[in-house]
Amino acid sequence: MVKKGFDGVDEEFEKVDKRFEKINEKFERIDGRFENVNTRLDTIEQDLKEIKEEMMKSQDFEALELRVESLEEKMGISS
View 1 (cartoon, rainbow, N blue to C red):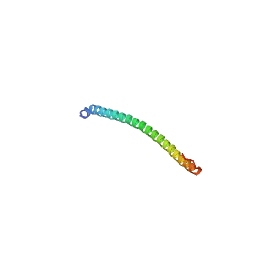
View 2 (tube, rainbow, N blue to C red):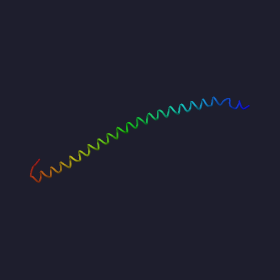
View 3 (cartoon, rainbow, N blue to C red):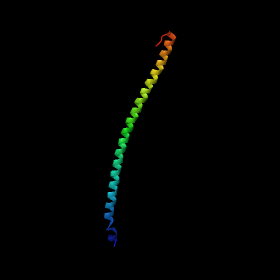
């Protein structure tokens, strides 16, 4: 009588095992996607850093240009 209660257990364990395999495959795909997203974010972060550096250089140049213009005016030099 007890044996009859356990007869279908092996089949159920196999079904559960297959479900876990499918879930594991999905997690592996998701993990791969996150690696791709992380790589892309790193690239974006580097691009933003470079843009910021270029903007700072541009602002420094503009400030220098204003100073030169001011000196030219004081010296009576027309550009």
